[in-house]
Length: 334
Image (cartoon, rainbow, N blue to C red):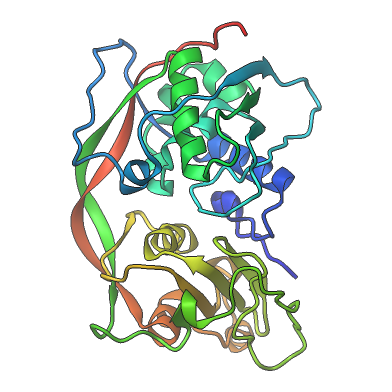
């Protein structure tokens, strides 16, 4: 069965991303984990230099706007919905020209700026109460027929600035981190493979057979998302297809409940397929008897990093970009 991680990592519910589950997931992130720096006064906005503009944003193009958009408070009892995955992942969906979602403001900020988990956690308690408690329905139409997900993010940035008067800037903070590196330079683990060597994203992947003694080489049915599946001896299998090392590093921060963000320093570019088998921290009893210890035959996550993927973590310091919210207001009328 698909397995959720513990509550403190609730945004890692490991299920195939459907439109509804994606929105519910992103709302949980925004309401329980996402945090941002907030300035009570509104100083003049600090413009990003070209060096600080994220690579994804440069690739998506310049400033973009929705053709039309409406914002309404979500009625009580309404189930969250979305036609686009609102996480930082690159999960592709048939977007068309429509954007439809329901969530707290933090959810939209996270989506618009493609924030990592660590960037989400910065001082959310300082935001005004309405920004964390109120849920908004946003319906919008893009000016082009088939925009990319990252172009939708740029349109959301413009919408937030126009309707919520959002002013933000990024600040670089030198913080303790965990560098993700190769154990041996130039050598990948057996379960870390270039995506081009595996099945294409439109291939039909058979469902996981939990009764099989062999861990499947490929089992993730959807590309550009990370999932876990319960396996034997209190272990899980973790998998991702067509992912980047930057995205995978972001998930490590969740799995290990690290106090430090994880920074990709592998030097690996392009996209990869990943499988790893381990006993996650939330399946290890706090107090283990001898019998309980015998039941936990799987590797730790960091052992799986080394043995399955050829990767390891090492302590370091690095500059991290933190989103600072300079000003925000309740949305203007439609």
